[in-house]
Image 1 (cartoon, rainbow, N blue to C red):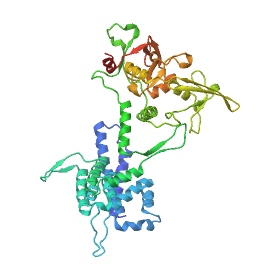
Image 2: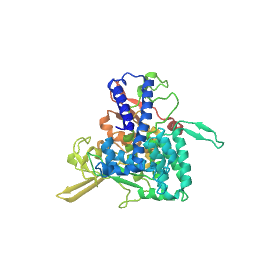
Image 3: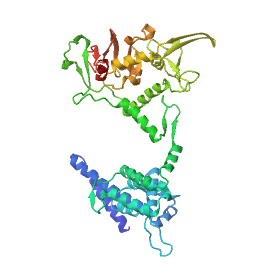
Image 4: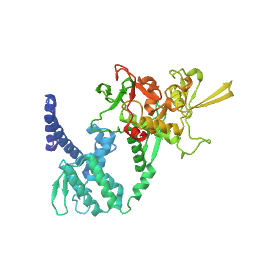
Length: 472
């Protein structure tokens, strides 16, 4: 056994002793942080050993010598890693390989010599190396060798946590993470690339996509690549819906006053604080996108389809839908599987209902009931309530759907005294969430589920300050 492999065997033996003795149990927070720091130091050096071994010019013969089709396959087998991890190792080895001179037989410098030294010193791992070299390599020959070597030195300094001043002095800073190195490399590549941003813009434009997969487990998977300006606009939409408003340093939640206690004095017992929204960030972003699509569909600038705004039509058999939409199924155009009939109830609450009577396939009757709140009514409701009526939900009312408190089918009018703003999520889940809404002389009142308010009292939401100022 070579001395090099023997050193690694001794390291493995020491690690086995540490793991076998259960030395990691019961450590303090400071001790755990030290263990993680040391593990990071060891991990980067182990990655350097793998990359340097694979980068050697003679390593090209390894796959054939050991019955493997490629270096990737060999690394998968000997390191017990997946194909993606092996590919990253091979790519890093290619970037650091030192070729042999045909004239002298000496080893030539690596393509990225400074980053190679940083990796051998344990300052950067495979992820950091690829993050630093990736943007520069994408520019290809548009960046000359001299500029690449200068960038290599600067990126290696960033990995080591060194900033060199113009006067030659150095300042120690926290070592860069792979994400830091990627961003810094992108800036350098943009600065050095004589073609400017055009190649990147062209590639990005070619890669842009939104792909919706096939229905699976009742939901459609979505994937794609957004252009930066599209991402930024979508992020603004998410922020508008998901960022809670901050009323002041002491405002930790939403305050409510029981309608029976409208005396002008606010009692501490009337305050109900806490977050009532258990959705994940990803779920909230889905609901924000759903609301944005609904707003876009009814916007005046949206092109029409068949002479009308793009309108979601839900088909449901009258025999399949109960009073509150529980049970039964409905269908949506373009969706290959039925959806719960409750979708029809949710859609109809803020839209129009068109009843089509069939007799053995023939249309024998059509009637339409339009229960869409007018723009003037919406503005008034938005001004009155300010945001989604559910406590803790700060989606602006202008983004919300207008809910008929008393259902239209039960005689509820499409009137401001019967409409309240609910965000897409809370409107869709109102029937099963435990929240109840009623109107008292045109003023909304809400009663929460028992876990939120054990007394289950009807309470009047405190109107947002911006609405009060607008009214005044």
